[in-house]
Image (cartoon, rainbow, N blue to C red; front, side, top):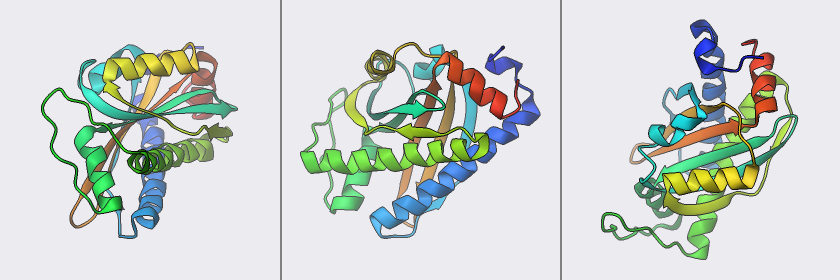
Length: 210
């Protein structure tokens, strides 16, 4: 079956938009409970992109980020990558723990404490799990995420780790950009579902794309 993103009818991308809306809604509800403050969502961006262009979508292979990798098992397999800019990760830590991180010099990686890693890990769980739940709801494909593997590194290194962890990938990634905010803060995260080739076809077939 053809799972080339370019072959998908434009109108059917509305289905992806529905996944994004449901996922963002789940994430806003869960983060509001975690942070104990109101959180609302913007209209999320969503698209299918070739796997080879994931690093470009994230700002280039050498961009420094904080990422969480979630291995997916069940009816579909592959992995979720939740990518946060360092400033966004620091903002989440500040909101949760009530302390601000010192600004980093350009090109420097942040070293996080155990409790800070726990906060980021829980955020990754919420974001990745929310979108995975949305995909399961609309495709009727059962899928479970693993405990997140966290890393702070360049985008290219993060993707290499993901491939090494999950094995061979499929042709494309489903990209969601989630923006959640309250009256003071905005949290922006880039989320990628990267299924293996068999799961690529399962997802597209379940959504009526092929």
